[in-house]
Length: 124
Image 1 (cartoon, rainbow, N blue to C red):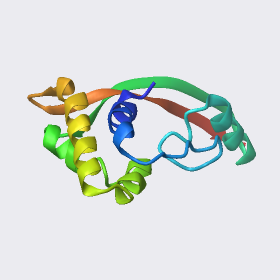
Image 2 (cartoon, helix red, strand yellow):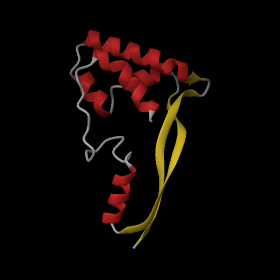
Image 3 (cartoon, rainbow, N blue to C red):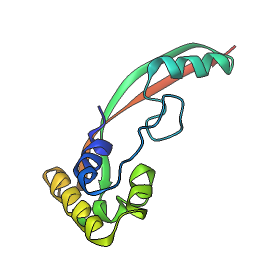
């Protein structure tokens, strides 16, 4: 549902060590992807009348493919995987990321589909 994060990850995965899949309550870039979890957290925090609306928008990933590749190993699970990867494997992973994101490059940068929630709630 979030190609901006999944496409680079899937491209690099064959060249990186295994990355553990986060559990449903673990922090991370998709930790609020589950509607029921978001609603539960809001309710436990004292909010009522929560409303979640899907908000799908292109995500700007960088000014060009080179910038996207340069940033790929700086955050999230790929940062940890790249840190444990020999240089020759890391180079292959970066090349795979470049190939995977290149079709999404345009004159205003690299943009890929992204999905999130627009959340509103009222304090009880």
